[in-house]
Length: 452
Length: 165
Image (cartoon, rainbow over all chains, first blue to last red; front, side, top):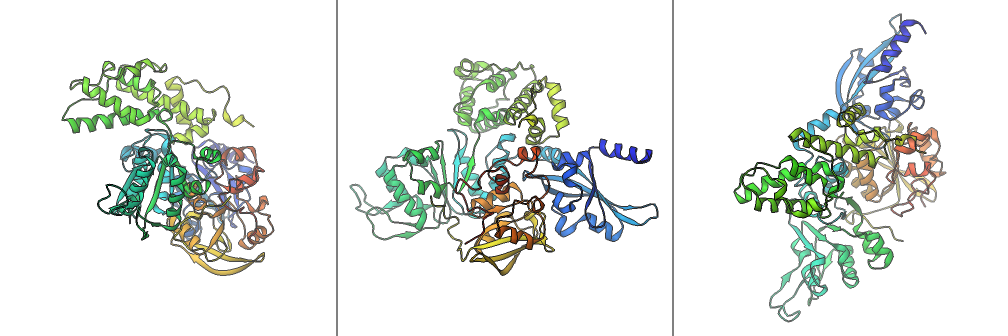
């Protein structure tokens, strides 16, 4: 290779845009380092393979830019599209193409460059709506799988099991699924199965006929009948007794309910969403929960992370609750003081978002119209708080602490693998390194990539 | 252990194999694939059934629902987004994803339980150290095979590499 060839190669290796070239048979001839990083496919794996097998983009089949360029000879610039990497993640990109010619001017193939727009897209979404679906408010990477899953889940009639600790917002997720589903115009009926004794729950779920028991002076429609054409949310499904589990299973299978004291089955068209904070698989193994009912409700599972795993949401949620209580109580609380926010960050939140909501409501009682100060917060927040990194006495410090918490959590979840952590956070790895340096986060001693 | 009957409103007329194709090869990306070949599985052979066509912007839910309505129990495809893969598996569609090559070779490989052949896989999944790290979870059954774990141990669906009855 001559000097020009070497310098071209060096340039291609140093740029942050992915570049690959193909021959006239659509086989990959070269694949630069950025292309390896963005696609997750090594050069050795890519070279010699068909470009569509390596770079499976949304345009390949219907509007391949490289094909258009080779057919018409015109380069294409910044075509927006997305591709799916080997983990199944959709990566937004922009693509540009050009014809490759030899020294005589004959076409020998094509070149495609692509730019990872994940970070831009993430920022755009953050500015547009902070990843809000329904009443779910989050900017956390830990919640991203949930947000990504919800539209698809909403589109199907499948039964869903929402699993999460108490106070994580299981009903909000259920309402979000209903709201985005084709049944959104129908009723949403929620019932907490753990709040009723067995006999009452049966009547609540299936309804009763007049005279079915003492005091049943009228026919009463149950939750299934009231949710007809809509969605029924069965919260704390793990608390249902074995006897009632049998009846529930039958209704889920037949989609027919028979009210207590009646012999007339009624067909219902209801989508079932369930939730629990218990490990249903374990309950099933222990015989406390029927395995056939478990498989019936665990068709699609949504796992909600606890608040301690998404601390970066704390300022956002706290701000949301302040706005809501201001509106409800006609107050003008201006926000949360940095030291109070520091306490919120340091708390372990066993009661999750509900506990945070209660803490802000508690503070509203004690504070005036200024910002919420540490002394306005419940006493246990200070008493049970884990040590927190010091915060500057300004907004930038608070934001930095939130960012640092998010980065540390992502690194921990990915066993120190910085590339994986960057992907999870939706930023480029160089951005992650820069932020780690700025925030004084020590890189893990061992990068997760080196694990066998 | 009984596999849950999913999407009760969808009939399952027969056991079908679905292959997303493009110009005689596996379509690069199932999420935007426009053509799916269907085969009725009968006594260890594949009998062609009318194919299914999709608009390029059909949602993953629409795709999965229509394939299930046609009786598809296994889907062989190229790349697939996590969202679509979850949806397929949640609706009882056994998934053999990230495959590449001519569709008739994939059919033969499926019938002879030879989908593990690296020549029939898309690059980047299932061979090296980097791949094992990336292809995690049970979402992609082909990755389970590569990790020498029997696919679908959790009974969520049939083994996508095993031929039908």
